[in-house]
Length: 474
Ligand code: 5AD
Ligand code: SF4
Image (tube, rainbow, N blue to C red):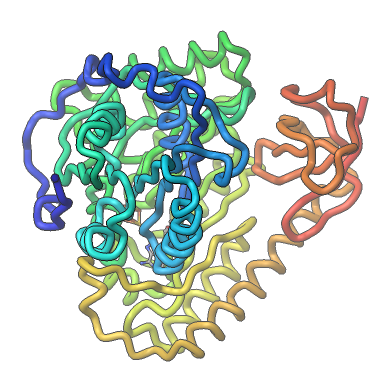
């Protein structure tokens, strides 16, 4: 058994980051384990998890499992979990409750826990004491070891816990079964060294490790050859890309430029921390048409006092300076953000500063959250004297302002013709296709399925807070 340890996970050593290319192997005893069996993966949380689930799916398919559309039809269920806020925990444990019932009637069902919650000491302790009926737990650092973990379980028939806390390596050569045939996630870095005081990610995802540029570029080239139109470069803090190379002076602006030069039709990247956002990056984004005019730039708070307590390394003023620089240099850029309300000690005045900043920036949209204490982080030790009611009131008030600007931005599109990557049939109406503009506006368009996977011209006819409606403009 290998349990996670926060003490280990917190460590940041100067040890060399190795790129390991031969770590993914399927032991012969389990290479047909999934023959005639189905798997179901439930994914919680961010895009990083979504992409990890694509890798887990491909590994299972390499072991001959096939996909089940519903967890009740599966012989193997994996919950790929998120630890960022308490409600992500609650959802996972709720799902485990339902699966427990299924397991009582389906004796050969295997159930595993993966993702960020697996990296939490307290979660693994809870699994070991109250969820002994589960079959395996693995973490974010050893996804490639899944076949070996399943092999160990085959032999022991007991709960296998195999979670690494401290990982300094980059694993290459993993397969991925991508959800879309048109747009793809491409990891460019793993982990985060920022240690914002509220955030669990540096503990669950480990130290920052950038993938080598050649590996990223060849992945993008391969995607182009397969017909992909869009890539999103993924990392917890993509602007810090390359800072961990000791033999190479190659940063995010270089990578963005080289990815743009591959000729892929659209390049996106998430998530940006304002601290590492350089002028050179802004210039590259402005220069290349295929780098989308869309930047997600989490601010978290508009109060410099709270930002300092959050360990964010910028002030309200310096954020605004960066924000304006981007707006001035990248024409028609859409900018979205993340905001936390109710951080420990946030006063009414601090919150007013956040509203003030939102009114200045007029974000295209924002993800807003009530602060959720995460055990093991510095903020969890801070005195939290804002009541739950007050936090909810602030969130409500903030959302009201955010939504007003979101609608205003969308209304500006009415009557205009925009380019949309038609990526799926609309969930609400199967005569409609849904897709995004390069500015990341969701568009529902009346169009035939033959347009799927194409970048089409759409005339916008109506604007809502969260989406636009349009018709094909031929
Ligand atoms: N509580 C509430 N929101 C959080 N986030 C990260 N940690 C917490 C927390 N403990 C939010 C931040 C981040 C987004 C992904 O989740 O806004 O940018
Ligand atoms: Fe968390 Fe901050 Fe790292 Fe983002 S930059 S993952 S908020 S520690």
